[in-house]
Length: 340
Ligand code: AQP
Image (tube, rainbow, N blue to C red; front, side, top):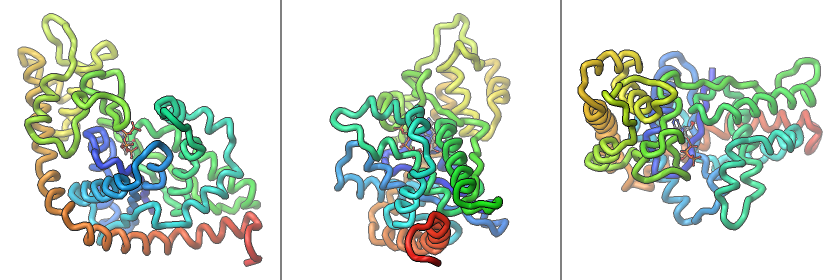
């Protein structure tokens, strides 16, 4: 079994990325290692070129992101960790997959609509094709499972359609050239919300700095952001989740996810609390306890770019060894290049 995850080299990873994705990468790696399965992680620098960006910064942010992943517990000896741009099989497969991707489907993607509206100068064709590149990432490895946050459901469904359409069009007789992967979504903290605008997800590109807790924030900043989180004016305050209580629900989810409890348990444990202050302080303490060791390891790792490059080179070699035969089979089935 193969588990695959990709992450953007935005460098400033936030609590949503950590709770919704990164910490599941680490547990996924450990499970795969224990069962003899394979866990593959990719830092998607090619995806990052689909919106306005600074080339020098991209390289730095890629190193930042790799250092965060290593600090969080990814171990290149137990899993494959590579940089997307080091595996040319993936962009080639992207092009092949465009032939079975409907333009109308890409037009319907929420992320494309949101991100294209944010671009000031150019809405690139790359941004439009982003989900096809993401599909190629996963399909090139014949991955079985893709752990992602809730915001990626639509992309995963499209990826599955692309794989099925490719197999039907080019596989013939039920031949599965590309594996149809399953999305795996967290049951707790699948969608951490912005602390200042709790009806919006915590996000790298939109949202406020005050409403976003970064993995590398200092403890004082974490405390300040959580203490100032928007709640509601219920009198007396009610520590419970509900559609009318976006801010409080988000804090309960954060506290549950950071203390390995269910949201129901958190509600029960805080039943006697006098106000939202107790919930905020408990959440700030729990987030800091979780992030402090990651920040410390990050500081040690980030200074040694040569070591990061060596880890990525090992990852790229292992990744290409898996992706090259899949690409070769896809090319052969499509009639591209010489007869096999
Ligand atoms: N708010 C969130 N709650 C839970 N999970 C989340 N993820 C993202 N936001 C939340 C999950 O994090 C993983 C990595 O996401 P990414 O590589 O897309 O990182 P990013 O682009 O830096 O993060 P954002 O915030 O998602 O960026 P925007 O909003 O700018 O597009 C994914 O598995 C994602 O589901």
